[in-house]
Amino acid sequence: MLQYVAEGVIFGSIIALGAIGLSLVYNIMRFPNFAHGDFISIGAYWGVFIAGLLVGMGAPVAPFSFGWSMLPALLLAMAASVAIALVVDRALYRPIDRRGGDRKTLIIAAFAASIMLRNAIVIIYGPGDHYFTQAIQLAKPFLPGVRVTNDEVFVVCVAVVAVIALHMFLTHTSRGKQLRATAENPTLASINGIDVASVYRLTWILSTGLAALAGVSFGIIQQIRPEMGFDLLLPMFAALILGGVTSIYGAIFAGVIVGVAESLSVMLWAAEYKQAVSFVVVVLILMIRPHGLFGEKP
Image (cartoon, rainbow, N blue to C red; front, side, top):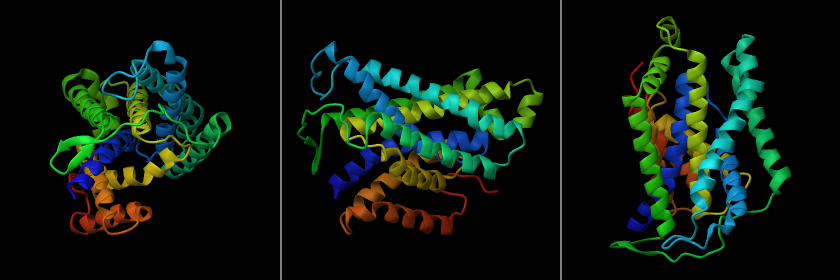
């Protein structure tokens, strides 16, 4: 059982990174971005592409399966994904918002962006699987009854560092405080001199950067597929709802909860039912706390 919990924490850390990005967009832009999962795929594919260009930077760095090229590949993948997100915002979301489109219109536009981005990946890279490395890592004892690979430990550590860095940014910088103020009341924030448009751009940068980080992290431990981000979208929304849509920190903890719940479900049912089990957990908890575990009561 402990092995399933450990696997759930690893998967949950990736879900948490994606759920944070969803929470940022929902609380500041005021709409659920259904294209968010595809930016996870975009980040992963950018990472594979750039890592392939930098393959000459050396052999794998012990004890991991990847080399030094992974660090610049990760950073450049995040930057490239953010650039695409800003283009989508300027070409699609912003004109709709400027012309008075409501949230429903933005949701439909997000679905359209999701389909276009996913098919663009298939056109460019093909429908097959891709890998950061073909090296096989053997799981090693980590705790009694728990075996994990070094790459999996790396992924969890990256997620923890990212969450801590985001917390420090939101609580100890002026831009972070502006972001929080805009989330509370964009009109009042604008009256007090906050450039709301720049806060919206910052929101896309943070949410998409985290999505790309989640995509690369997922690709390090599993194969990369065009549909991988879309498949992760349901668990991410489950984490968003479970944690409370108004709580970024709730999305973090709920992401781990969803990951562990899906992993433990394999002990009882086939792996194909994992996502269904996570939603059962969400429904049961929302029956008790409709605003989520960490959300504020309306």
